[in-house]
Length: 269
Ligand SMILES: Nc1ncnc2c1ncn2[C@@H]1O[C@H](COP(=O)(O)OP(=O)(O)OP(=O)(O)O)[C@@H](O)[C@H]1O
Ligand SMILES: Cc1ncc(CO)c(N)n1
Image (cartoon, rainbow, N blue to C red):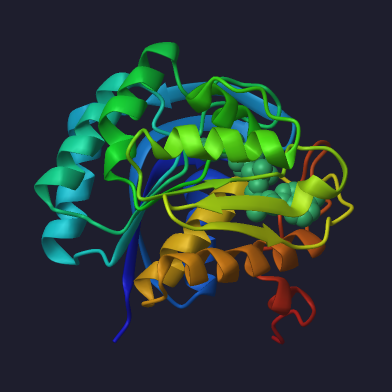
């Protein structure tokens, strides 16, 4: 039986991050991907030019349509953009009792564009984080959520402990934005166990969408029945492979190669 995963996130017109990255990641994992769009970004490898949010009612209606008919074995949230959308999403998740929830607390793009307004951060912390099975902040997001400047494994640890107190079952602080060897190191804390997930650092500047891809791959593995830690471990292996086959397209930061095994052998006509 095919499993179903739902992503609640924004559209990246350039196809590297957001909903587009999530659906490719779900498909790679042979999970049926459903989506609830929160906003549309006019975006490419150089940055975000414009954002238009959908109404919170429209976001909730998409979640209702998907979950009411198909169900969802796992859910991930990405770019939620404003407080009203976060409240609608939180409400829907509670109403439908969606329990395997990966929250990627997307706040800024790699190129510095704001993807979450300031009023929304308090709502994310108060309403959404307590519902999360796993929250996956990058260095910058972990700093905002914890109030700690992050520049080492020790400070990642301090931040993870503080973020765990905000209510998610587990925290994964990602090292992608850190210098040197820490770039491939993510730190896990679930209130009891600490674990460092380490892969080699991939030398590429084409890293657009790594965070979206990781959280979608975690959700896909959860939908397939993996336990939370195993889902993270498998997702990290996938992101590393996709980074190794990142696409040098566009004039800025290219996307990861979601379908890397297929890139080696184009379809025959
Ligand atoms: N150069 C790299 N080599 C190996 N792993 C990396 C590299 N860059 C990022 N990663 C991994 O990719 C995943 C995503 O982390 P990252 O910190 O880049 O997320 P992010 O900033 O939310 O991404 P984005 O906002 O671009 O989608 C993590 O597992 C991280 O360790
Ligand atoms: C739509 C969207 N979601 C998430 C990110 C973060 O990478 C992005 N750049 N765009």
